[in-house]
Image (cartoon, rainbow, N blue to C red; front, side, top):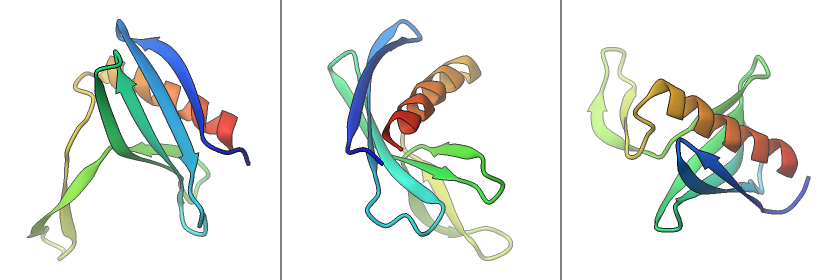
Length: 104
């Protein structure tokens, strides 16, 4: 496992810098944190990368607990920042996962 790593890419016509940092404690499904810098002027932090029980890598954008519960009594979370289009989401997630593979 490597230390923090950063890569530059062009996604959706924007220059992005993806930084992935492995978590110290990787006992659960979450394995790393990531941040993205868009066009060197806007940064999104709090992105989490994990591996599901089936072995699939997933990306979780930053969110917060709303203080509300769903019908089953579980907490409801609301995204803070997220890709709006399917195409941009796929391109962005692909870059994050690619960087995750370099670090891990």
